[in-house]
Image (tube, rainbow, N blue to C red; front, side, top):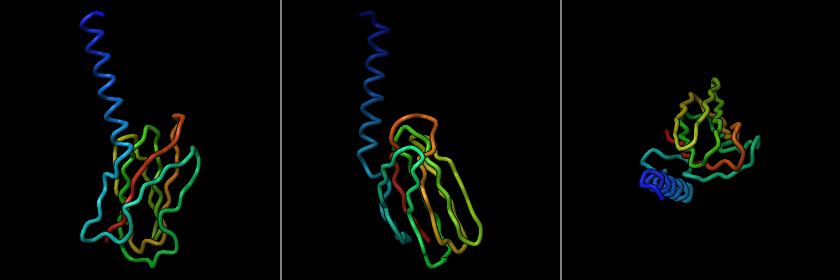
Amino acid sequence: MHRAARSMLIAAIVISAASTALAGTLPLTAGGRTMAGPGAVTMLKTVMVPLITNFFGNDACVTVVNTGSVDVTLDTTGSGTGQAVVAPLLSTTLCQPALTAATLTCSGAQGGLCHATWRMDR
């Protein structure tokens, strides 16, 4: 095997191992202002999972870390609405005055399952 091909193969194995390791961990931990979570979610494409429903309407932020290889969409509802698409291996936080609900949807054009972790903070 040529040296360049061997280097590319080793790099592919390392990236694959890192992705597998990340998918099996919970990258968010509870902090001093955490009100719910952290939680882990695995879902099929186009499935919506409620993270928070019938919440009391306190000002809060929801953080999502996409630990998979398919886009997920975070939606929040409160005194307004918010939406963010979270690409694989990235994270986002949406803050909402008077938060009442938050959902996560497996939204990517890519195939496969969605994997994400989430947490809600004041």
